[in-house]
Image: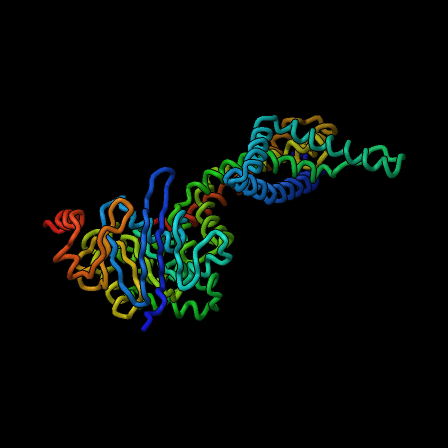
Length: 248
Length: 231
């Protein structure tokens, strides 16, 4: 019996910023429908790793293959890969000069070539899914941080991606807004979306993740199911990290 | 006021010329500014050097000199070329309208290059990353994200550039463009009333610049509606 080809394959991936090595020999396979949580101290390379998956950063060692397409400089249609990979950023990154609805419709029209009326329907569908359809006509600045991040998730979903990347989606939020964003993410996970989430929300990791990955100094130090990861971590660095973030 | 009788329509048509020069040079100025800024921000060394030379030369020389050089330089070149085909030709020039329009657009465009460059650098990298992550091409990102965010940042300085343009149109009278100052000089010649005629020109320019200032203010309000909180 052969397992299906993984959706995302990272093979011995390395990345330098000048002389600083941000990623060292990263090996990671993600299958369709899998939910991965990545954690680790700041500067551990976790953001860099997921940014390499949609080539916001270029890796300089190893191979990255997304749905059978290898990410290289020769890649003719990088945007074809990017539209299959949704991304949610720490600081939301909504287009400030556009209404919420236009934020959701822009890439659909330009990249997916979706007709305007249909793009609007899709946008409203996902706004309802993140429970803020009434904000469609407003500008990003008029929304709370939690609402902006839900819009950002909806914007990525409008492209009907194969996989969603989350780069510390709740780190910039006031505490009372974290849950509304996590609820949307849990909901997405239940629907079977393939997800890679860089987050320190350990409750989310426990209830949703298939695997938790711990990174430090550019390497994957530990990788386990949440049960094992939280209750019986093997590596000393993981234990130290967990004791620090779960102290209170 | 009787001295002005008979000159009103000349001033009117002079004003029309000012407006035409302003509009044509505005389009060219934006174009030169955008190309200059794009070149300065590009990774191409040669493009950077050319844009650097452009801003040094046109910001560092008197405007009136640029107009004269461009007009007579192009006329000498054109005449020389024409004489190859027809030795009878005495003088051939680029129409003063276009020589002047291009000259002031190049001058103010060199200032706009720096304004646009600064404004492009001020666009939040997050917006651009989001556009990339959504699969938008560089051109699409430029048109739908960079430009709309950039112009809001560029607007205050850009308003000044538009005022420079409208005022620089007066300089083109020295190469014989029949705009308002040119009309005033003719009127002075026949009426001997310099103060009255120059005041008329001053009021005409004040009228134009007021419209520009009000337009910029309205655009700023429009641009900032997305930056204000509340509904």
